[in-house]
Length: 147
Image 1 (tube, rainbow, N blue to C red):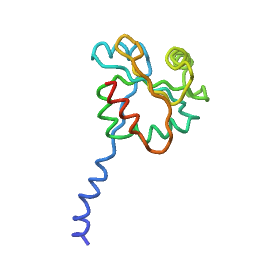
Image 2: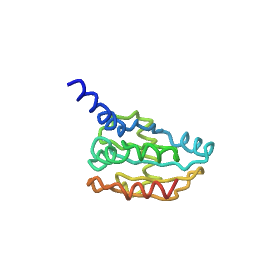
Image 3: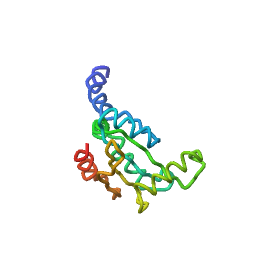
């Protein structure tokens, strides 16, 4: 029995190797642009409705929680803009900040939305939506193209 466990252990560890560590998202636009200038990286802005948007929730699991995104995220400064229905999830300051950015960078109010900005805050590209099928190749292509 111990021999069987010993032989299965490497396979269990291989399965654990696919679990990514989460990335750190900023929530302040000015800070993101400042870091972008300092590090010569584009800003990836993610617009989500964390408490009401099913495609946003699935995109988190299918894309943002993967090792591939973890690797790609190193080429960006990440900015998380949440527009929840439950306003108690954010401070009033954060709510106002996010609403201002929604009006400026996501005028159609589409969720989920990925927007890429240069170090001056100029919009370079955007990609919206998610079909909730597990198909993230278009999102990955967008991220690879804009880093």
